[in-house]
Image 1 (cartoon, rainbow, N blue to C red):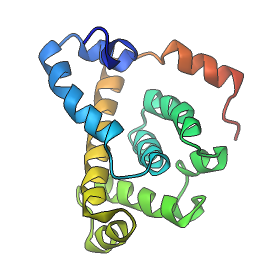
Image 2: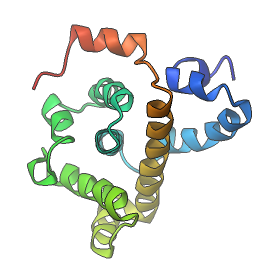
Image 3: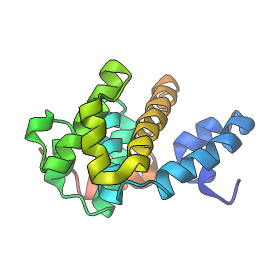
Image 4: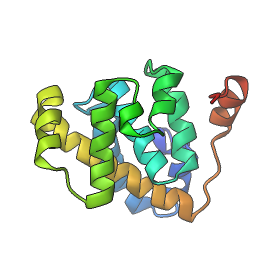
Length: 164
């Protein structure tokens, strides 16, 4: 695992203190990050919203940079921290409402399931739920251990900050 994803990010360096957990995490992480039924930009909106709602500075900053890499415009990224009605698109608003419902009520109501299923299919519904769960768990770890922002992310945002 030293040659893989686990050495690149501070969050995984924290997890490395429990090698069995990190090893188990790897497969789930690969599915959520690489094999998700949500398109890359939609996945980043879900992660940003989850990071915002979980008050995880690390995840927010990490995914500002990753979101830009996925083609998100700064207005979409900023929108992930606003009310869903202020989102940059109807799809972003739907994704944000889904994240909010999961965090606020621990469930995805039928109307949101149906709308999400129309947009991303049944597997997309499950992938969204798994993504919110995974990034919520990461937020708990990151905040508990006061994980520092990765140097490359800090440098990227210093060069091109997200202005409000």
